[in-house]
Length: 500
Image (cartoon, rainbow, N blue to C red; front, top):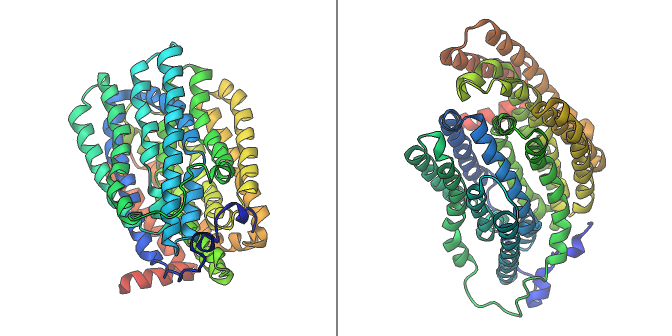
């Protein structure tokens, strides 16, 4: 496999000269449940708190925070240097060798700490000492996000498939987040309190997992510890991460720079956030698949890998397609009711950005089930780089012409190009025809559901209760359509769920 030599896939032989007994893989369903719990909480918390925050901070307050966060994210990117993606795969394929992963974890942690310290120094010099930036205090507060990088050990727990630890830490920090927001954010002038709570809870989530890291890597480490032994391999994983960051964060940076309007940043921030909230359920399963697929590929279990990828594809299609149609159908009523007055522009942004859900799901599916597990990060980086370049070029004149709407169109085009490239190159492993076949029934059911829901939304007056009715009707229509189309995957899983 490509780049396999860059990882220590045969770490067993390097460390102790003997092959370890393969560890029995953890239950995918249990891992998904733990991961899904964390994702559901991560989904519910913004759903609950966003209407409160949006009305207090208003679009311009939200926009200022969004812009500063986008600046800090570039430093976070270099502090990570692709370490987490590389480390997750390395832990996954060497999980049977406890001595190796112990030493590897220490080396990676030290490298992250050194890189984080260097990036933090550069950040403070630029934005606190040199540049004359507005909202300097916000820049200081958001630096906590950068500090948190050194304490993020989720890659380790994902690699050994202990998603319960990640889930518990996430749930506890999210609960604390809600409590703090309600207690300390009362008026628009509390924007600094809001920012401090947001970034501090990220750090708290990572700190909770530290005792479990010590438990898993306790004991004497054999051999010399070299923090930068894996630097070259991490750089290979860093390149696609740069591309991802460019076309996911550069939109907000360019909106702020080109328009100079915190309002436009605020509209785009919330529209994108609303669209990407439902992706949590899908990315949860793909994240779990990444660890398991890396294990299958490393052991040469290709039939198992293909079977798992096929199931994952159906799951992703079953959720992502109706999500897009559903959001478009109810956006006209839901957004004013949910965000409050002043966010009307988010409606048309959601009309555009909603289609990112199935498009991103495709690229996430291929990335988690094929490119990362099999070690094809170079070609993945190339595709992501092409998408990033397209996004920046389109943003440079589309934002100038149509402000946040231009950024939305640019993102959609860039993501679509990336997904197409992913599908075409990986067609020997997962055929495009199979992807279409797995998705066809869900697309047809979603079209019918979307038409029914949009019609109801158009004729019924704006109301929370009518909105709930529309959502319920949409879900019922979608489920009935899947029964009418005799979708075996949905019916079998529903029977299994009811039986349990």
